[in-house]
Amino acid sequence: MKGNISPSNRWESLVENYPGVSSLHEEISVLIADLARKVRTRFDQRAREIGLTRPQWRILNIVLHVEGVPQSFLVQKMEVEHITVSRLIDNLAKMGWVERRPDPNDKRVKLIFPTEKVRPLLAEIQAIRKAMEDEIFGVLSDRETLTLRKLLHKVNDNYSRLDKVELQNKLHNNN
Image (cartoon, rainbow, N blue to C red):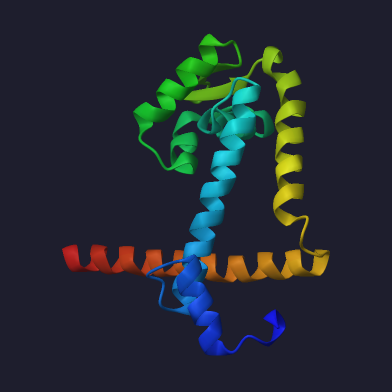
């Protein structure tokens, strides 16, 4: 009988699962946020098993793939304050996993490099990531996964475009 759910019954089911949700778009937004929260929670649990926090993992993931990345780039990618990234890097440096080096072209810029000590951790990080990807997307066919990616990029690109338009309008109004 589940396959023949009428639109009104579908919304009744929605309200039971997500009280206060009143539209399809709102349901999708709630589902995306709910999935993101579940993924973060699960990843945090797994990362702790190897002595990492999610923010530390994000920095290591970038640094291990792009050696000599400017600290300011990490601030931008992490979308946090400079001091937050600085403290994360301090902690990773204390563990012997990264080191700061001055940029040869600009001594004010600090470049972040992985140490040899952290390289074996990369395999563990990748294994956690792969296991989680399998858990999350294992229920989808390759075609469904590609469709999901395409749709999420479409929505994300539109939102990014709206952010740029909003910023341009603010700049224009301030002049």
